[in-house]
Length: 375
Image (cartoon, rainbow, N blue to C red; front, side, top):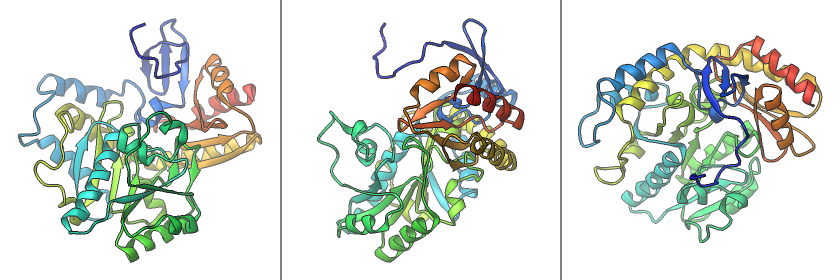
């Protein structure tokens, strides 16, 4: 073995995918309800996405960001058109990079204003990535342990506990960074009233509101951006995962006033927003807009079927759902795999379901039968 053992891998080698199904090297078929951890929005071997990638590969894969990039401009327009106000986009390669960019943008914004604000409030059970800034923002001991000292400047509060946010507030606080649904934290949903209080606090204290949409964004919850469920008006959002449909790409989207803080040379990415990634993302973004009604319909159907199992608490929105059990669920992931269903366990006791957005009711029925059997 020549690869560092940073992942606990399941004993299956997938070699092919089609629609919502994966196939291993033995020719066995699996129903995929993980989608590369909420990445493969259009499933596998989608004809339109495949053609766009192949066409772009034949013309231009990568250019330096020292030159104009029409593919970035086209994709940025699509993303801003779905934002609540006018804004600008910075492209990178992953969710962790997007969150690093957001953290830098917050600090730079207040530096440009001449204010000594740099601290950011984040939440326990959140997950923002594994690079140093993103890991420091991630309030989970298991993620941070052994990598101390962390990046200074983060204060942690409890989700849906506004008093804990007020206790974390300092004169140097620059912003509040949150996920409206904690994916890695066990599909924990933020309450609408809590989120409105957060937004009001940000406006009152002049803080920036940063919404991490890495897992929840690009149609995953039934809205193009998940913050739309709560009528939020974030200053910054971060994107990745489903944005490229399997091709690595991330993005930081900020309203105009905030985006101005980034000037030439203040941030960058060699591969960020390369022609191939942007071309693929254009297909994904336009298709996802068409799929939103289906995500809402099938998501509601799936949630109802999970509730009918009567074995645990069901949380989440759209096609980002979790089933919380009263025991460790890692063994159930293995049992599901043996039955031909790909899922995963997060926060030790929560089965997470994030299938491709093209999934249909008939696939939900297949998954439910397998879950009923193993549970």
